[in-house]
Structures are given as C-alpha cells and as structure tokens.
Image 1 (tube, rainbow, N blue to C red):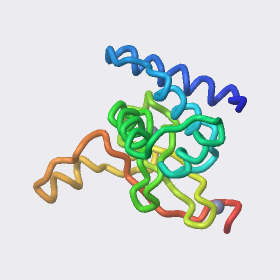
Image 2 (image 1 turned 30 degrees about the horizontal axis):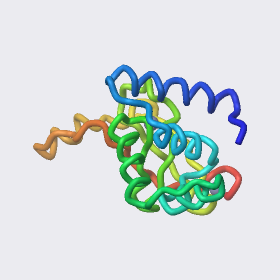
Image 3 (image 1 turned 180 degrees about the horizontal axis):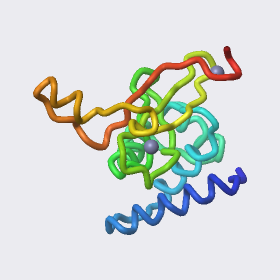
Length: 148
Ligand SMILES: [Zn+2]
Ligand SMILES: [Zn+2]
C-alpha cells in the first residue's frame, strides 16, 4: 500500500509524537497506523483486522483495539463514536478542540477546529458550570458537498 505525500507527512508526525513520549514504535503500532492512513474514510477495528489478515498476518481483535487505543491516547487517531470507527487526525498540531465533521452518507470526514467554526466551547462550558474535557474530538454529522 503506497501512501500519498500527505499521508507520509502524517505518518512522520505520528512517529515523532510516539518517540517524543518515549513510547516504543512496535511493528504492530506501525502496521495499524499504515492501515489507518491508507483509508479514505474512518474504519473499524474489525476492518483493520481484516486488512491485517489480507497481508498474511494475524492479530487478535483485542490486540488491534489495544494498538488503536494507544494512538487515540496520543491524539494521533480520532475515534468516531457514533460509527465506532477510527481515523488518523488531520492536523496533530491543532491546539484547539478538534472537530470531525462526518458525512452521514459517504462517511468522508472534514476536520476543523472549534475556533475556525466560531464555537467558544470554554465559554459555553462555563455557562453550564462545567469544564470542557480536553483532548477529545467533537463529532458533527454533516452531508458533504458530493452527497448534497
Ligand atoms: Zn484532529
Ligand atoms: Zn458524502
């Protein structure tokens, strides 16, 4: 599977984040990162497992989940909860709250942040007397340009 330039850059960023946190870049972590980078749309742990099998390798599903969770904790991968699928973050340098706009028709994702969408999440949390939980992406269901 050949990765495009943008994907390669994302991969290098992910590897640097991993090494900066003194984490070990195991073959399985790299393999699953590559599979996620190779997908245009969010994919499930079972999709990942099937793609690993296609490569002639075998990993049990709990190992796949463990590796995915590893990347999610590093904020390299976002979980799309309502689909129970995963995708590589489009911009790991983004310091604002990451917003994943997911097309409910074709599952393509346009990633933005709360600032660029004009959402003052800290202020609205304050009004509720709560604190915004950091490092979790917010999901917004959309219909993309192609599917309108
Ligand atoms: Zn992101
Ligand atoms: Zn669409």
